[in-house]
Figure 1 (cartoon, one colour):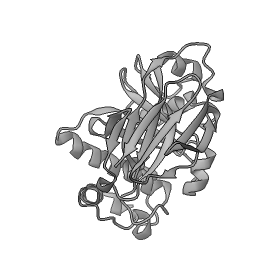
Figure 2 (cartoon, one colour):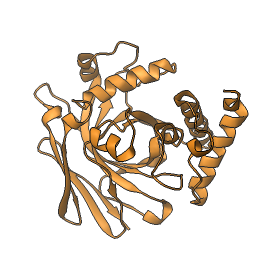
Figure 3 (cartoon, one colour):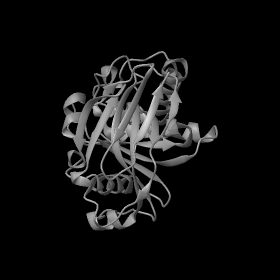
Figure 4 (cartoon, helix red, strand yellow):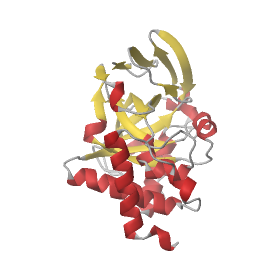
Length: 263
């Protein structure tokens, strides 16, 4: 459509950045432009990320989102999306997060990876993805929306950088051949009480498949995954409200726990 010109893209990116900075939500883009395409949404995302980079932020990785049936059902979408991780989004395990800087935050436990070599191209396979991984770890992703509610299309989520707000990284361990990440059970607790569980296979059958999907998607836009980058594979359970004065923790048998204090 003619509406998706550079001026329109820049205007939507500015509106989303302002909404986040001022913590004043805006209407979902699809409410006004119901024909919003995924391509246009990714262009909005890229424009907003580009402004953050120009202001000093640095790309440290990517996220695959809405990769589990639980999250697709919760969000009312049928396909994954992806976003860009910047250095100012990442927190080490045990960090404190001031909830008041966010608007409608929710939290998800995920299996995540750090790459030891580049992963790019249209035909990346599961074995190639596994070979590219140097380390694996648990992560808590704090998602937030700059829109007035969580009722949105996948295009809205994409434009809003796949709703990513913060990423809490657990200790990283080498990915070994005997690790069956599809069968890895994650348990999420809030305030010491277990509130959610999920296995790695909830993510596209195997969390490594998120790398395959993401490498293919980035290739279609002329990019790829790079050595040293971290990649979030997506939540293994439906997201949970992030409330203040609480501690969120995720653990699993083979991977060290990750924890976030909300203040």
